Image 1 (cartoon, rainbow over the protein chains, first blue to last red):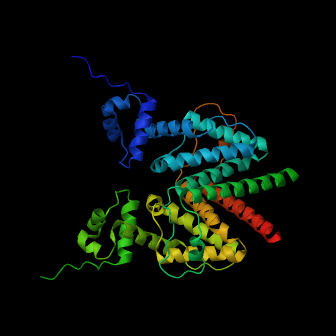
Image 2 (tube, chains in turn yellow, brown):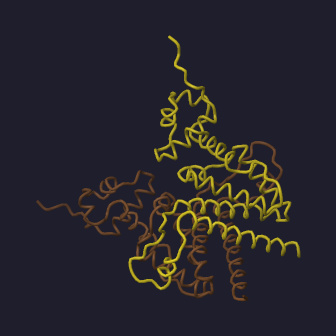
Image 3 (cartoon, rainbow over the protein chains, first blue to last red):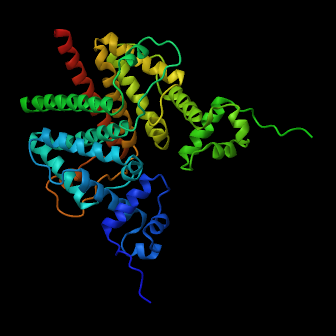
Length: 204
Length: 204
């Protein structure tokens, strides 16, 4: 009897199935992923190093899709490009976020992306002992704004009198228009104060 | 036969049990919560308006614990105080975050907290059509930094040569020391550029 024609397992195919599984809201685990791929858990273990290995495959797959691998240009262009990519990644896959943030990053393409970002910041003039803190600020910012896109159209619905909030809500933007505008404001505020900080450092 | 002495259901007791349930990583739902409280789902429905109502009780309970209800002072003090509170809330209950951000806010004490924040920004001189975008920036920032605290001690572990990242990691801070310092830097950057923006608005 011929064996059924199941496409061979590949790292990309495993990563895609894992992302779909988590996006769907079902609990993530090696057995659930094997079922979705139509293979046995043991054949999955031939390709990946357990649960942590699968998370790293997901990170790599998403990173190559959303992040600039080798960002080039002035530091502020690299920062803006990286932030936009990270935000789209987190916004597109909010359920994957808790898995990604809880684990050490080893995937080579995502490491390359952060290496490009830190290199751009160093080349731009930020001091060695400040660059990783700046990266954490950028990361947190992108993460928060990615999840902000998942907010409902009406964020607040006051049930009684308010001093200010109710009045502002009357003419407020909603949905993705609101979130886009807030992201652009946040990016502008962040870049402006980073430029100011850099100018002060150069003037020392 | 005397009835077993089970404490009466209260909104706070329901909220606390729901927060514990979600923090524990178990799936959240009305039936699971009723089991944890040792009551029937129908007696739970006497107190809350289903799943959405429970999420709002959790928001209120956490808000009263972490947020300044009626923040007072200069706008930048109110912003700093609110950001610190929101970050602690999100960091302490990361699994609750997806439930909270996906739903319209109606809880009166959390509405009062945002009303205080928007009032402080208006009193500080920010224009009507910009205040809610500033609030979204602050919210995203707090959310990202709350989740940043859940990062592992080693965020990156490059497997090969890097241009910059590996060198910086050699002397990098780790764990909560790293996250605290990054949060303080982010807060400083944000407040600085908001002050600058306000100065420009006043000069118009």
